[in-house]
Amino acid sequence: MKTSALRNAFLSGTALLVLAIPAQAFAAEAEAETTAAETTDEETADEIVVYGKGEVRQVTEIGAADIQLTTAGSSPFIALRKLPGVNFQSADPFGTYEWSTRITLRGFNQNQLGFTLDGVPLGDMSYGNTNGLHISRAIIADNIGQTRVSQGAGALGTASTSNLGGTIEFFSRDPQDELGIAGNLTYGDSNTIRAYGTLDTGDLGGFKAYISAAHIDAEKWKGFGTQRST
Image 1 (cartoon, rainbow, N blue to C red):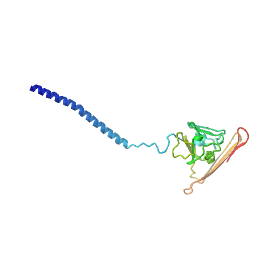
Image 2 (tube, rainbow, N blue to C red):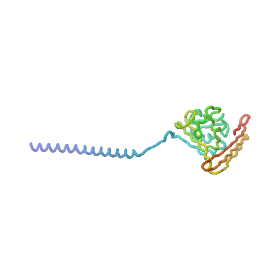
Image 3 (cartoon, rainbow, N blue to C red):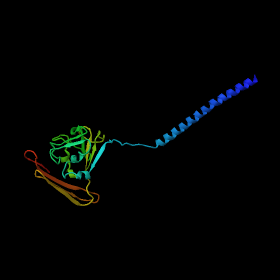
């Protein structure tokens, strides 16, 4: 009787020991995972990812160097049409004949795009519009320093008089730090002649400015008449 009781007690103690070991191992593993999770949370809590505020991600910029590669006097849209998703058509090589120009951006026509110059709303680039200036009337193409194209929906802060199926923002060039005179002269078919000149005042004690003028005169490539702009 005593032997049986001792044997039963030994077997019970062994079973409890066997059960206790996995329980302790499980508790230790759970504690390790909790500690690792807390450490990971503490490490990632210090990492902040900022995508931008009120901005879009699909933005392409064209600088003054790219614009200068086009023919002098060309519309800034000429430089933009090399970008993917941008299509620009015009009846004249300069792209300044407003009646014939058409621009689309990923399938959105110019009436659905937003256009600004230095943050000021422009028109929808159609001929005879009533909602703002055409870019060719607002600034001489040679004085454009940068163009920014947002092919997605425009940023919420973009001032526009058109639907925002994308935005094209123009920025004028900054005045030069040194006094200087620059210009160019273009001649081509159909008796096309264009002249441009600019005078930079340089830095006058914190004040800089420039004055520019341009004139173009060309015969129509089809029909009679001339295209003249000053």
